[in-house]
Image 1 (cartoon, rainbow, N blue to C red):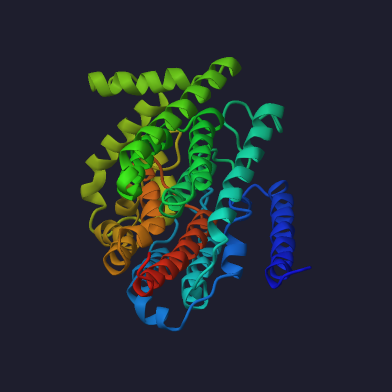
Image 2 (cartoon, rainbow, N blue to C red):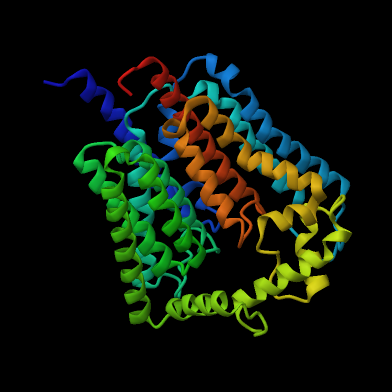
Length: 412
């Protein structure tokens, strides 16, 4: 006998499978398809099944304002600062802004999204596992001569582990307090994140963020068993990093050497050596800070950063590898303040309104992106902004759902 729940699950499974197949197919032919393929089983089905009441409009207006003000400043900045060198191959500013704006409009759909869905943590988990399997296939079989840093979804190999880490952190609030099976799945996803960041991408900063944020999540959300979870998460991360280093050594890549170089720099504070990528970044930041008196008031335009970096520093890199310096160079102090409000304002509002456990998904996303912003920039291309907006919107809907339920359900 087919129950109503079974009948309802059939179209759900059909559409999630169809979306998954379509997105993976697109990712095989389009270099920027990470916007769609990085979370194939996660975001779109979750949004499709989400529902809420119109009251969320009143609750979230300040969050919308914090994000949309940044979009407005981006548009003004693009219009006010023409490209410094028409002959230099800078980005398509108008096209970037159109994608930027359209992705931002997703925020306006939040009042129409999820009031309650029990499927979203499972869908998110499958999304992470799917990404991991694709990365592993590229790594093991060498599709396209990938080398040591896999570019499965985008030319920058760092993006998959960044978003995977953010999503797994977002699952903590639900799964760390769940059944034993859910906790075991959570540990497995943490292991996957550490292994993929190390072995597939050589992402040292992301590994450091995982070593900080996963134990912090276990401690903050683990309840009476926080110390047991803290030890277990620490052991899981250690196992993932060890496995990554073993794979790294077996394939002849140099992640271990690069981590050792960072430790040496931290111990000696000696930035005099040149030629190493990490030293190049330190030197670029130092030079950029020295030049900031020229830019801090109004900047030179977000679209001009690539040209300025090469013109001023003669560098082989095309941006400052620091989100906050990029905001300051691109739009001055106003852009920096706008970016800080855009990134860190919403989680503070949600934390105050709904509490730590309900607001945790957005807090986790912003923490990963904000910490990564110390060594790279994540909003320099429209598809990256779109990825952030879609992820933020989906997690925001879940925060509202959990927060409203927590107000009415005394057992939560």
